[in-house]
Length: 484
Image 1 (cartoon, helix red, strand yellow):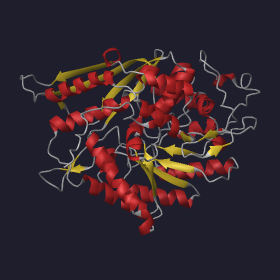
Image 2 (cartoon, helix red, strand yellow):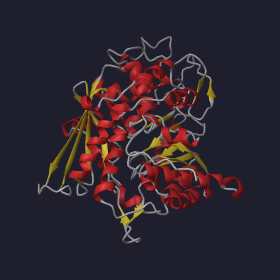
Image 3 (spheres, rainbow, N blue to C red):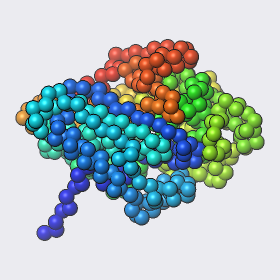
Image 4 (cartoon, rainbow, N blue to C red):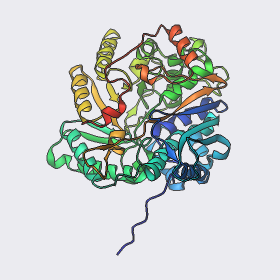
C-alpha cells in the first residue's frame, strides 16, 4: 500500500498566496523598489480570540516563513504560465526570501493570566519594511491566524464532507452557467480545507461536458494550488496598489489614474486587465477611467500629475505582443490613443450594492460610446444565491459576469456537535497602513469597509467630494457566507 504524504503544517511555499500579490510585487520592483510601508491587522470578529497555545504556534509558523524559497520547478511554472512576468522579476524571485524577524511584529495581550495554555487574549500583528520585501506577508499571515484559531481555539468541527460540499456548490454554480474562481486563501480554515475544496470543485467541473452545464471553473487565486492541480491562476490587482500610490504621491485626485497608468506601463494594454474600482469610491474612479492614457510620444509631457516623483522608470507599456491572464494575445499598439475604459477588459465589484454597480457601469460605458462586451468580476462575500442574482443583473445589462468566491468555499463548516449550527469563520484583514511615512487609506463603496487613519479618511472624502454609500447588507459578511 502506497503511503500518503502528510499535508503541510502552516505555509510551505511562497506560491501559497494570491496571484495579485505577485503581480503587484512585479510592478513595485519595476517602479517603486525603495518605498517603505507598514501594514495593520484588524480582527473584525474581536470576540473570537486566540489562546496562549494558538499564539505560540502562530509565532513558530511566522518564524518558519524565513525558510521559504521558490523551487526551480516553481520558477519555471511562473515563466511558462504567467507570461506577463518580466525576466527581471523572475530573476528577483529566484533569490527572494521573507525575513519575518525584521519585518513582522506579533504580540499577544492576555485578558487574564492564569498560566494556562488555554488563556485567551488579543492578537496584534504589524508589518514594516520595504514594500518590495513585505508585500507577500499578508496572505500567509491571515491564513496562519485562521489556522491557529481553528487548530487550538474552536475545535468543534471536522473535515467531514468538505469535498462533497464543495462539489455541490460547484455543481449549482456550473449548472446555472456561472463562470467562477476559488478566492479563499486568506480566510481558509487551513491548507487541508482549501485542498479538499479544490478537489470537490474540480470534480464538479469534470462533470460539465457530460451534464451539458454551461458554467466554468476558471481557476483559483492561489498560485500554489493552481500549479498543483493544473488550473489557471487568476487575479490582477488589489486595493493595495491604489492605496500605496495615493499615499506615496499624496495626490488622491489623480491616484486612480496614476495607478492605472503605471499598471498598464508594467504589463501592457489588455494584460491583467480587470480594474478594481472602489478604493476611493467607484464614482471617483470613473473620472480617471474615462481619461485617455498618454502615448509614448507624449508620456513625459502629457499630464505630469500622473507621474510618480522618484519612480525607478517611466510608465511606458511594453512594446511587444502581450499575453493576458487568459492566454489571449493582444496587439499592444501604444501609438493608438485609448481611454483606460477601452484598454481594460472589465472591472471588479468588491463593495457596495452590486446591482447598483451594474447600472452605474452600464451607464458609464454607454456615455463613453464603448460597445465592447465588458466583464464584471464580483468578489464581495459571495454565496450561491448572490452569484445567481448578480449574474442575472449583469447579463441583463449586457455584461459578462464572473465570480471570485472565497470564504463561502474555504471556511464553510457546521459544528461537529450540532450539524445544524454554523462554525463561523474569523473575519480578519491586513491592510496597507502607510507608505513613505504617510497614512494609506481605503474608502470603498461601503462605510463598513473604510480602513486606515480616520482623519485621513475624512480629509480624502472632503477632497474628493465623496458621497457616503450605504446598503442593506453592508458589512454583514458573516451573514452572507452562511447562506446559499
